[in-house]
Length: 216
Image (cartoon, rainbow, N blue to C red; front, side, top):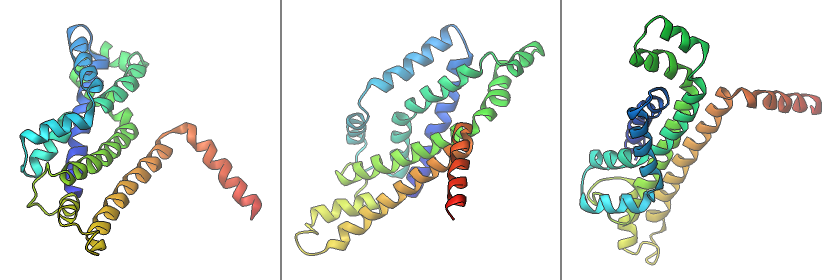
């Protein structure tokens, strides 16, 4: 499950960075086409779409499941990154790069993306969290590879063999708890990186620390 979450999280975030930043910086036909593609995927209900795709590739391996989660999971992150890139579009350092005659690819990769590192890390953790939940859900309903060893397939076989009814509680409880703990870990890391990278949260943190100091 960790391989699926990290693989799908990295791939979805990479696609979102390229499409989101390009849609914000480029103009004309490229901007319109990328925005339409993102909007179409945003309005489609994600989990029913995952079920339909997974049905056609049923009993597939880990790489196929990562590909399915990647294809369906990048649009929301791309919209977030596009909004952030739009706020940077007319900054002085970008205007200076244009005056120097730098190409659009150089400006996107070297000038814009490095300034969005904290947001990209947070987006990766969010994508990894959703990959854990969606992958385990698909495997639980029998749309993954039943012979694979993962927490989702453990829950699938526990449900098929009526583990709770026959007193084999740990068969169902342990993989469910592991999924919950991994999801909580990604969520807490996301909050931590958001606090580190968001300047608006730093005064709040300092005020909390000062209150603790005065109380002690």
